[in-house]
Image (tube, rainbow, N blue to C red; front, side):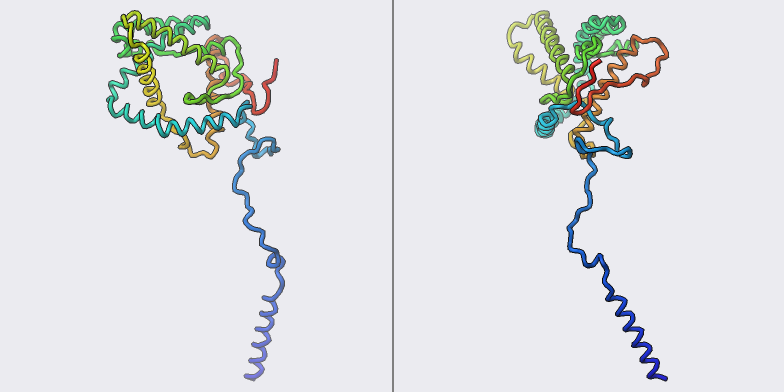
Length: 293
């Protein structure tokens, strides 16, 4: 009996070994390496499925390669020079003083808003900018104190870029400007107009103050303070958005914001009750010319 039990146990063990030695097709495959996909980034020209339709992120950017290089340069400049200088600026000047600088700069910018309010045939912007400039330049001690806002005359800044948009000039291709960042062809032209007006305005201020010598040095100092104050009030930091596609994200957000800016300009002259998002946006898409109407 014991011998029969041993034979039966031996038979079961041999059966188990025979089962293990069966050929598994997957075990005979040659090593293929790690080929699992690691990125789902959209590729230009690649067909997009309905589940991954990211076309709304596309922006007309024919100078994509050049813009990305400038974006990278701006990021390095910002990290190495701009942000450290802003840190020094915010450390030396306490918050109330920086607030006064911001108010004074905003007050000087009311001249730009007043001029463009006229060019846009917008009476509200024109009278608002004029009132704010007069009040803050006098009662507000040359704009250091924003008395107009305390009197509920809120600021409504506008510039030549908005004026060109109101006149019907299309935005054109997306472009990244050295040191200045995201823009479009239309907005770049508008910024040049803003700089030219500011140059004339500051020369008028120097004439009024009787400054004859050292205008270049004063202008550089004034522009530097403007730049530092502007950057100190912008919380954005390069490569800290947490997105591996930060360039695409910034490009989309800038373009969409400018679309909404133009939408607001149109709503300002439209009848009451018009649905806000009813208008079909005509954003030029990547590598695709805007449709001519």
